[in-house]
Amino acid sequence: QQILQKTAEELVRRKDEISDVITYELGISKQDSLYEVGRAFDVFSLTAQLCILDDGEIFSCDLTPHGKARKIFTIREPLRAISAITPFNHPLNMVAHKIAPSIATNNCTVCKQTELTPMTAMLLADVLYDSGLPPEMFSVVTGWPQDIGLEMIKNPNIDLITFTGSVGVGKYIAEQAGYKRTVLELGGNDPLIVLNDLSDDDLKKAVELAVTGATKNSGQRCTAVKRILCQNKIADKFVEMVLDRAKKITYGDPMDLKTELGTVVNIEAAE
Image (cartoon, rainbow, N blue to C red; front, side, top):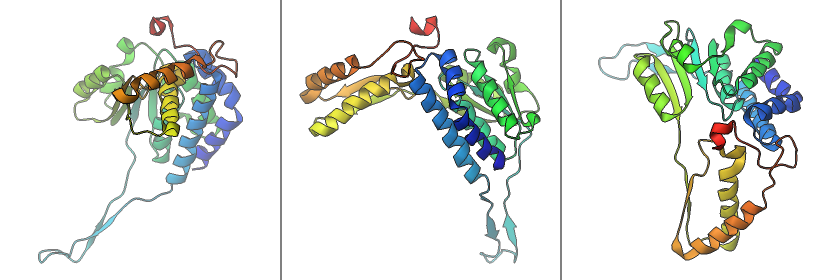
């Protein structure tokens, strides 16, 4: 608990340094990278509170005519090793979501952060070590998927594979994992539905959701608004309002705190 809480505090103390690394790697605005650090703080802080929760259960065995006068209980025990494979779009928060619960349950984790944004995960590892985490409990490995990807799935010491990324890769992991436990968080398809019974205030909120939902994190989110389904009665008005709001977005140098919309992770993504 102390390690998790200290990590949360260190993230806040070093938020400018960490958010700079995120912006340099990912291209998102400084506004968005600071928000990313805040989300990671929430993960470590809440996990620190939950790690002392004992969710073991006790069951009576004498509830039926053929039962015995005894009780059974459940406990949780750590796994041998967890393989965590994380995406580029949230290089701090996605790693935090995997390592914080692992620490809380006394597990060891090897994280393969995507080759597009490896430095943020390494920086988080340093923060964890500085907060008292034994280095053998968390390792970050780097490399091309074709070189180390299969090892992250097939290694006999791995009991659980947790992956966030594309549907195609998730299916491949499921096929290769065999009887290993898997936690697969895969891509989304996220429409925003706008109905014609909205009040003027609610319509303004819908416009804000449409624009920010599509552009926050430079649109690099599995939950980003990808399409809008709007009823005909208000469609023309809604489109006009969305365009007006989108034109007000400030874009440019991602390191400028006034910039709302930064860049994307690389040229291929931009094209």
